[in-house]
Image (cartoon, rainbow, N blue to C red; front, side, top):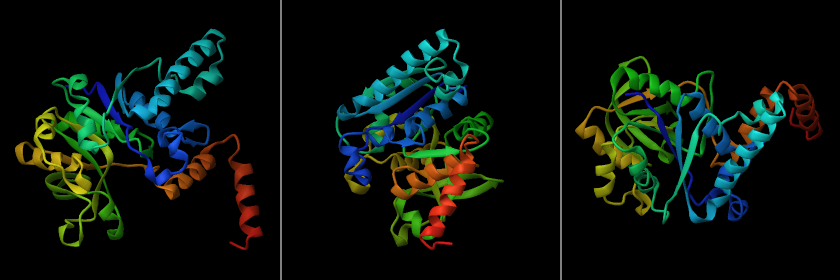
Length: 292
């Protein structure tokens, strides 16, 4: 079955970006000239996904306003035949249907995914976390979709991380099936020292079968007293085969201020329009502060 639907959880409180996240959702804080959630939606659209559900909180109505305004702007630019402007917007609302639902309380990622049950129905679906922007030649979620096409079951996007960082993520215990593909034996969310299985972390991209909903409806709260998606996937792996795929690309943790700065700098360096001027500026500033 082809993956046609994607879910983007964007209801988190954004505490790592206080105080700005008091008034602006962290998903709307820009990398260069577009908000982070724009990049996430672009990735889904570039992967051929037609229907996208964004899960927001009551305080994040401005996300819906952004995409509504984007749609109106696309129409005006199209009428003017302004191809340069259309290219900059990515035409994402013309190529996809974007829906919204509200998570009533911040009870965790697993709880947020439960709100997608009616939208997903009995189909497998993609999940793209709004904190993770991934730059790659082939869209990251498309890479996972291709692995799903081979195996027809849940696929988790993973990468190797430094040991000191593994405690921030879901951690994989698995068997290497072939290059970059693992059979998932177990998962643990934010492991403490005696729970660490490996240096492989689950990082913000998933293809999930609909069997996850029954599990999430009955699971007990885990770490941080939240309904953890990792805990649900761990139980799913006991019921059906789940694979993990070590995806290609440069991942930025946008929920982290350092990751946000890295993304802005590296996207600027990739921009042919001003990368050379930007490099000159960085070198000038570094020299001024005796950093080189």
